[in-house]
Amino acid sequence: MNRKLHIVASANDLARKLRRIDRSSYGAYRTIAGSYDFEDFILHIDRIQGDPFAAPSRLRASVPAGAAKFPPQAYEPAIRATGVATLLAKRFAREAARASSRRGSGKSGLIGIDTPAQQVLERTAMRVDRNGVEARFFAGLPAAGRRILAREAEEMLLDDLPAVIRSVLFYKSNDAARIEAAALTNEDAEYLRTALSEAGLVAFIADGAVLPRRSGVDDRPMGPAAVAFVSPPPLRREIALPNAGAVSGMGIPPGVTLIVGGGFHGKSTVLSALERAVYNHVPGDGRERVAAVAEAVKIRAEDGRSVSGVDISPFIGELPGGSKTRCFSTENASGSTSQAANIIEALEAGTTLLLVDEDTAATNFMIRDRRMQELIAVEKEPITPFVDKVRQLYDEFGVSSIIVAGGSGDYFDVADTVIAMDEYVPHDVTDRAREIARKHGSGRKKEGSGRFGTVTKRAIDKRSIALLSRRRGSRVCARGRDEIRLGDETIDLSALSQIVDESQTRAIAAAIAYGREKYMDGKTALDDLLRRILTDIDRAGLGVLASERAGDLARFRPLELAAAINRLRSLRVTPLKGDG
Image 1: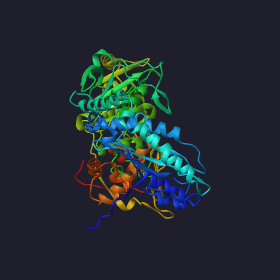
Image 2: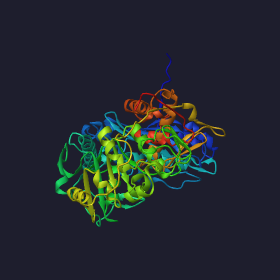
Image 3: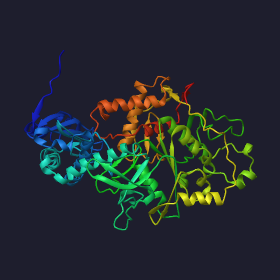
Image 4: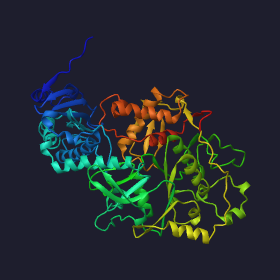
C-alpha cells in the first residue's frame, strides 16, 4: 500500500517560501502549509485562513520528550498531565498575548490559544505525555488588505512565535514548583471526588476553602475580604489525599440536605461552589479541595424551553384540556413543567445528586402549603410538589438532593441534614430543625402516590437532527458558551450553568453530530448513546469528534451532552417500552 511520506522542511525553507510570496494575493499563503524543523521543535501549519478577516490559521508546535525534558511525575498518571497541560496553556496564552501585535488588516499578527479559566479540563489545545509536548494554537497571518506582508509574517513565525514556544513548552523554561503543584493538586482533586462514595458522602468542602467569587462574571476567588470556609464539627470529616495527606472539611452525606440562612449569608455561594465541584480547579482557585459526585446536576426552572416526549407524570398529572404527561412535549414549557422535565431528563442521563436553589426554581413546583391545599382542592392541582417527591427520589433511586431553602420550612419534614449559613460560616442545625418540625407541624397533606413513578428511557430519531443548513450546507458549531448551531437550528444552553467553557460547547456540538452519524438508530436509549460516545472519547481522545486537528475542544460531561440534545426544538424521540 502506498503511503504519503510526511516531509519536514527546515525553518529556512519557511523563510524562503514567505519571501517568494511577498505582496501576492492572500491565497498564496496556502503554499506554506506543512511542517518545519526548528531543531528543538517542529512547527506544523495545518490550516491556512481564507483571508485576514477570517478565523485565524491553525498551527501546532511539537516538542519531542528528549527536548522538552518534563519529568515523568509531571505526566504520569494522566490526571497529573491534565493539570500540567492546563498550566502550560494558561502560560502560552499570556506569552502569546505579549507577542501579538497589529501587523496589518483584520486578524493579522494575532497569536492565541484556547485558554483555560479556573476549571481543569482535558483539552485538545495542549498535551503533555511521555512523547513530549504538543500545543495547538492559532495565528493571524499578516496582510495589508488581501496582500501578503511576508516580512511581517517572517518576523512573526520565525522570531516571535518560536520565542513563545521556547518560553513555555520546555521544562527548563517553567517554574518547577508550579509544575509540581499543577500535577499534584489535580491528582488530589480527582482522588477526592472518587473517594466520596467510599467515605459515605456526596460532597465535601475543605476547611480553608475560598468559595466567594470576585463577581458574577469573574470566576476568580474573591480577595482578602472572603471568609475562609470552616466546617461545623458535627459534619467535619477527614479524607487522606495521596499528596496533601489528611484534609479536613464538611462532608455532606447522601439523602436530602437543606442549606438555609438569611439573605446574603452565603447559601447560594455554597451551592454554586458545589455545582462547579464536578470539575477540578487550578491551584490558588480556593476550590481545589471542594468536590461533588461527578453526576451532580444543577436543576432550575426554565420557562420557554422545548420538551420532547418526556414522562413528567411523577410530578405533573393530566393538564387542563386533557393533555397527557406520560409523553409530554411542548414548544414553550412553563416554570413547573420545565423543572419537572429537567429532573426527569437528568435521571434518564444518570444523575445521582440534584442541586436546587429556590431562587431559580418554580415556587409552585417546590411547595404547596396547607392554606393553598385547603383553597385549591388536590384534584384541581396537577402538580405534585418536589417536597413530596424528594424523599422518594432518594429511597427508590438513590438520588440525593441539596436544596437552598430560605422561605419554606416544610422541607424540614423530609430533610436528613440541615446546614445554616451565618455570615458565610456553616452550622449543623439538623436537630433544631427537627425539633421545630415536631413543635410546629406544617399541617399540609402529603400529595401524590406512595411511589415516585417511572423514568422512561427514550431513543433519538436521527432524522430530527439536521446538520445541513438550507443556505450554508453543513453547519455544526458553537457561538459562545451558551449556543449551538445545528443546520438552521439554534440550541439555547444559557440555563446550563455547569457548562463552564466555550470549548466544551464546541465539543458538545461535535459530539451530537458524531453520535447522530454513528449511534442514533432509533433503538438505542439516550443513556446508552451517551455512554458509547464518552467511551470512544476515553479510548481515542477528544480528537475522535473532529475531522481535523482541532485545538479548541474541551472535555464535557454526558449530562450536559444529554441536556443539549434535549433542548433541540426539532427533537423527536421514541419511548422505549419496558424501561424505567
